[in-house]
Length: 214
Image (cartoon, rainbow, N blue to C red; front, top):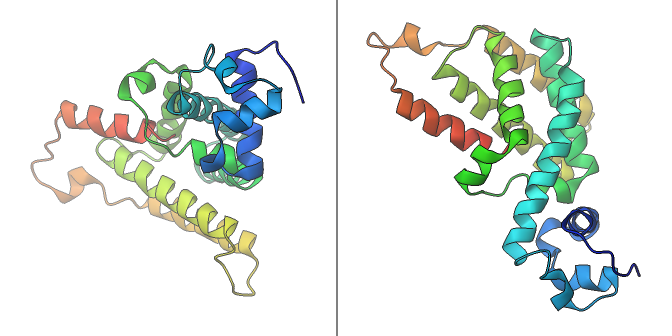
């Protein structure tokens, strides 16, 4: 039991550890109060409610994830950057399952816009993809492809969804290779549609959607 000296940062860090132990959905204020050896009411001086705690945890985990990704892609481009990004993403999802689950929740757009870590996530992700010569709206399409591939693969791997004898890591590496080939040969929007129209308003909405989940 750890008593008093409570701060929002300490509470969120404890919630992150608890999420990895028991699952993000099972993190409660009561469980955290027991951890700190205090009554539930003591936490409400620092955290408004469970939704506030989950939002803070999502921001905390998102910052950890992009820190790992930033290190993995530093000084790299093309296939090397993509592999570094993908590897850091997968490692975090498997090593920190509760934290990772927190990064997938929907968040208020105002919080997203105000978060330097979400902006950093967008800058690193879009920067990596621009190296493939992509521009909007292809950038947003590519971000969605990467996120759905990475998240889907990690979710299946974490729950034992791959039953074949083939080593899971080898299939992951092959998937990254396939994504690299796809990005190098992307069916660009301006090559497929004569008018090539795409409003800045739609671009802003798409970018905001992708940033909302890291």
